[in-house]
Image (tube, rainbow, N blue to C red; front, side, top):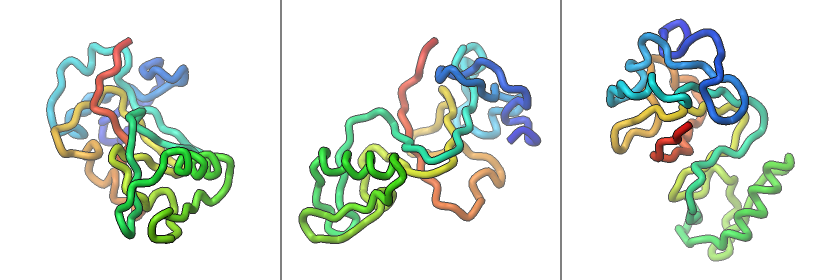
Length: 157
């Protein structure tokens, strides 16, 4: 993304996490579906790259369903699995209805959550309705399962 000038090479104070992020590059518009001239005026407008075991979530209230039978799960049981995974465990959970054992990334999340080791947070990068990830040539063609844990809310700073 740096080479394609979608993000800037130097990290700056352009995200709200207290860490440094990559600001939009000269050609940031290649990675979004709707051109957003206000993005460059925002304080929080960068890309934060997270590495290490992490729970990626959209901060939305969620319902979680079994991938096999679709039965909605009790949040307190799902939360136990999330905490277990976050502490280094497998996070495998058994459905209370059909007994299927499934990894957290396989469950049906109505507000997608992801459990992994690499994450990209695009602060205030708008997408068109129905899009899941910013588009970029070859950016997501990495052979891994990708999930967008997103919120369509704009953060202000």
